[in-house]
Amino acid sequence: MDYKNVKILVVGVGGLGCPASLALVDSGVGTLGLMDFDRVEISNLHRQILYGDHDLGRPKVEAAVDCFKSRYPEVRIVPIQDKMSSENLQSLIPEYDLVIDGLDRLEKKFFLNDWCVKLGKPYVHAGVVKLEGQVLAVAPGQTACLRCLLPKIPPPFAMPTCQEAGVLGAFSQTIGYLQAHEALRLARKMGPYRLWKVDAGKRISRSIIPDRNPNCSACGRGKMETLNDDACAIPG
Image 1 (cartoon, one colour):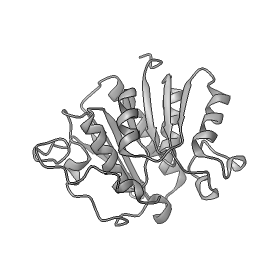
Image 2 (cartoon, one colour):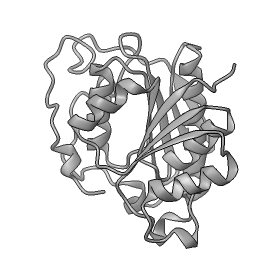
Image 3 (cartoon, one colour):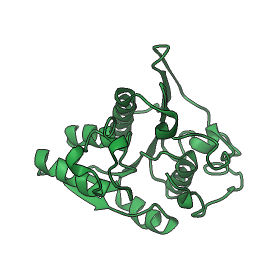
Image 4 (cartoon, one colour):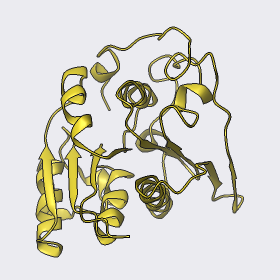
């Protein structure tokens, strides 16, 4: 399939967003929105493959644009150096065909899930800590969403980020590439969509088709727990 007319928004250009973005552009995706407010730090370099020593201190989206321009000048890269919020997600998400969740904090992942579901936009969730990772493709109205799997948002900082708990850079990249693979399947409407779980320490992986929760507070008939910017105020 020709992906040159496909537009994908990547929210979080870190250990997941970097490899996912690179794989999507390698596959011919024509427009890539990159949303991140952070700057490149030395602790990022072992897993965030778009950046080098010369990018230290620079905004991540600025460094990422330069990386892509040098390799794929024909691709349209849209840098969005901004913190995720209700206001900008409502305006940005409808402009794209699907969304990549490259965020670290689980609380922020719920926030992005809720807005993608609310706006009916397909997206791909992923998470990685140490040697365990998971990827979930979400087609609102058709598949389970993140809240179907975890009905309650954990308390802030209950789950560590990959930077806090540690992660093998190559494994983080593997999960990001799998995330891009699922995004391309979504773009082609190649269901069924699955939840992938990978344990690199035990060298096992498995996938299931999770059931939708009819009482889900995001995609079902349940009442939304919250849909405000509180999660976006959480650092990290």
